[in-house]
Image (cartoon, rainbow, N blue to C red; front, side, top):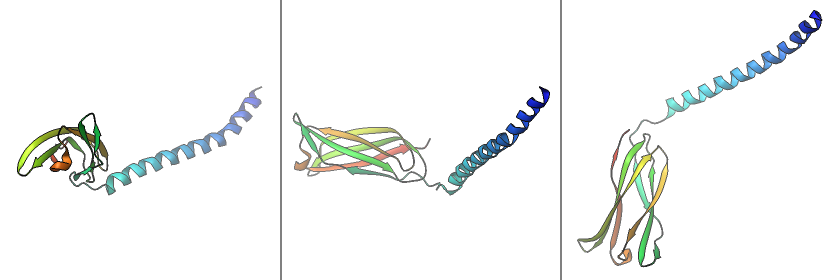
Length: 133
């Protein structure tokens, strides 16, 4: 009975070593990828841009969808987007949106809702401010 146990253990040992070696390679590979990503990541400030999408009209309201994107290296918090509708030099309607968190190379979408037709004036959307985490 004792020799049977020893032979079973001897048979499992190579399989255990192979499994251990594969697991160790996977862990070392993952740690290497994380370190490589950290070293090669650009450490530049957030670069934020706003893109206006196609306007929708619903129940007399004018919806202006937008997408804000962070193409910079760092994360931005409390990103404030301002929308202004002007006729001539006068602001006839405005709005503000806040995006809580925008990581590097991330996009978020939202919409401004105006009661006046933006096609009858000049619409501008811009990033007004952000905070660093």
